[in-house]
Length: 412
Image (cartoon, rainbow, N blue to C red; front, side):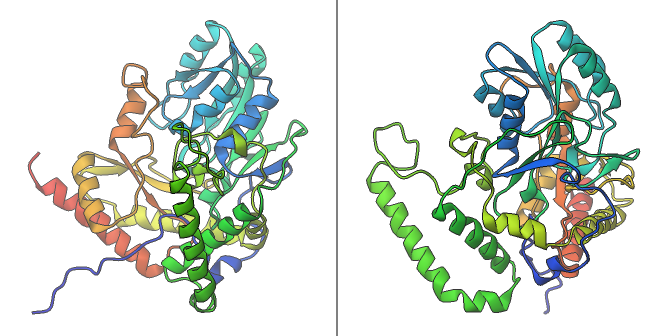
């Protein structure tokens, strides 16, 4: 008897390199974070946050306001500057709660506010900008999820004193972030991180593409060098293990510094050694070479296709009922009534997903912001990036629908 079960697919959770990435044209329908801005390409968005806060003069005794719905990686850059962090409430759609921000400002010592455009949907920050101007507070526009976009004709990244981006969320690269400003000149000197970092950034991006079936001819040509690289990497790790373990080990052992920042491997840490390092040559070259028009068009198409595929499915609703014309989404955020059951089913099926905000900074719970706690518990986000092919998208849609329908049919 022939099985009708869908074949398990390996779907890239993030953009990967392919020949198609270089077609589609340079001119995107939406403005880019880099358009008309003084910019520095760094190794991660969190490094850019630290540099932005430093440029605003944040230091000991100051308070930085961060949204209660957040990635824990947003907090250590403020601590690096010597500041305390306080968390302001967000609304159900993730927009900043201005009344709560005013209450924090009234308590004093607020030096800077971090405002985030979540999932690629730009917020209207006009009133927050006015509040900052009234009180002499710096505004950092967090565009880690929002590299392209505009709201009411206002480009993302143009409202804050400084804006930060995470290029590795939108481009097929292993590492990368940016610090930009349309209001100030950037007095930031960056340096290269060495040959090991340059090699790792290039090879990891290529290996990610190969792992998901892209660039097969190049994979064949590089087979021997990549095997040699793996052997060398193994020898270096073995040597490191004998001399005391990983970099930063407090047991007394000494090892060579990490070849790449831990931010590229989904940690929440902030390593000050990367604060003055520029993004790799490979990543910078990819940013210049790939098609922004394709990125915006494909991400919007993929988002809307998934939204249509889930229309009418019980037990869920999109965080945003419509995709604004000025948005280029990072991921597709879905609010789920039975999130743990659905998550477990999707995990078994091998579906890539993100539960952004499921882990918040210690002490941030429903008593601080009920909306943040609810979003962190119920929201599951799915990839809609430009590298997904038609077969991968069809499989993803089918798996998400099946998990939601199955879980909705089982009594709670």
